Image (cartoon, rainbow, N blue to C red; front, side, top):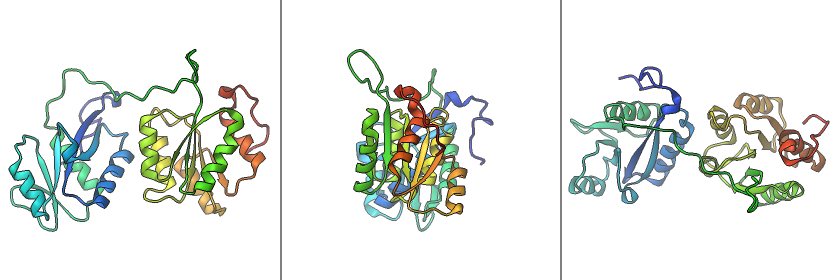
Length: 273
């Protein structure tokens, strides 16, 4: 069966649905892969939130490790109504299965097939975005920056570079953590390292630029590489500026002024980044 999309379901992207998918017995690596697939695919009509089976009070689907006797026993001994997908080295007769390694495209098709048969709530709205952080009791909004880099030194240097602008700064050390941050807060600017543990910076940038509400957020990619190929790859990912580390202080200041200077009440830089 073809994947269910906003077009063939006859609905607008503003009516996206989110389904809770519990994971039972999967390895930590597989859990990270599933969560990454969900985040990168967040622009789809059907969104999937992957959670641990023990922490979920209500699930729409459960993914069970079919190679784990403990997981299978836990699934069979627990009362449940939600459908299950079994992941393993062999297929279980009469069950919906995925062979290892888990392929993201196949998983999404299977989940779409299952959830398309579930009744639609009477009224649906898009997932709420987290409220912006007020700067003080007067209700003013403080500009917020996200710095994504696995180097503590780089994170500290960027924080110091942003200090004169009075921005509030959040940090992430991995691509997955960055996507978590982006899903829970609204940022005015993102500084994004290319080489990250797990999902790389290019994939995170693509996810930002594909999101209807985040795509206007300036993304400044940071890297130790300076080749033309890397700059082209950054441009294709949708980044607004590509800076080579270590970044010269004045250039860094000009970039901040250029992209969010107006919201900070400072004049934008005249030089091009």
